[in-house]
Image 1 (tube, rainbow, N blue to C red):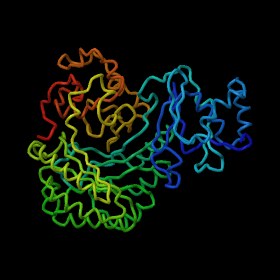
Image 2 (tube, rainbow, N blue to C red; image 1 turned 180 degrees about the vertical axis):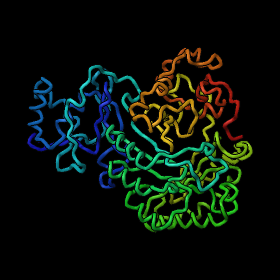
Image 3 (cartoon, helix red, strand yellow; image 1 turned 90 degrees about the vertical axis):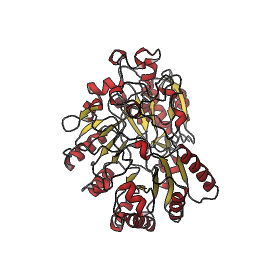
Image 4 (cartoon, helix red, strand yellow; image 1 turned 30 degrees about the vertical axis):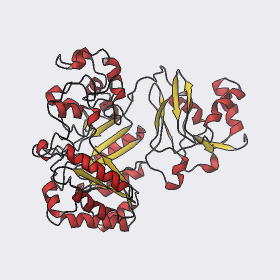
Length: 496
């Protein structure tokens, strides 16, 4: 084995973050390699590991690598061999203690050279040099891990449950400025650069943008749309292998007119789009948002009878519409009832038993509110990436921490028309929000006197959107409503 040539698996990327390092991977990989790697992997590791892995940037005989590393680390060859063996063709994820913390690794980090399927990057040990070690801070230090770019604030529909803030009029940045942001993200080794709207397919340069992202190592993981797409555009999309999400709340033209404020021919156009996607084997999913206008079993059965016929459908996601800060009308007048949710739950569970398609049912988790002890690290639901690992770039270049906060001035942390990504990430406002201080909270907030304040806010898992929806913008410093000590809602978020 020592005579075999070994190489670092360049599907994974090594990124230094001043006082520590990361190993990460993209969201996409050819299907033939999916069992071989871990997609969307990201973990914080001691810099000694990427220093060692850098010696395998190019194929090298294992015996030679052991000798070189022995000199570099000033330890015996036996110790080197024992150190690196767990990472050679490791079939499972692994972890190890180093630097007084656990370091987590994906599978197949160092592999036989003939198994390599990605272009090599020439890492150097000095790239991962550090003066001080900090493996404890949760938030990325130099720059975020991911970026979401909102291409526009334009929609084809006017959804009754709309989650978008369409009131702000802005001057979009030029396509040249967008490309500069993408290039800086590439230089910073940003893991993902994803796209959002508005409506992606109403962005004039959407084709050029997808091409440019792919040229620079970024591929979106999902594009969501309510816009009917032509067959020609679907043929163009096929080369990117990006799943498409079609938002479809009903196939009844009258219901869609009521929910989306669209013309009567919209239903047939969007159904034709789905047929084109299936015809060209473009993977897609369907998302249905439930309000009082479409929360009947009859409506769901009509949808099911339609979507179950398509081979390229990878899932049908059904969600209960939640309170938006921007929806037209009064949310209490359009929201689905608790009774309807229970009936739908029964229907979904029964339908799943014989269904050939994957149905993902996402009711509002009422039980998640007002019950968590021990702070934000124990909150139910996925961890919030806002200002911890992700930034959201608005169409005019302004940067906010969350896609649902839009141009709320409290959460604007910078402007990429005048600042770099690094400058925005480490701007005074970004750091104030990332590392809040008790003295900056009002007396009206329970957080002001909380005994676990430091531990809770250290974990970066507060949903400011739910806070504002439940308590109002003026009470943005209230605790996350999942906290046991959070006050009762001023504005109810739950079905009744």
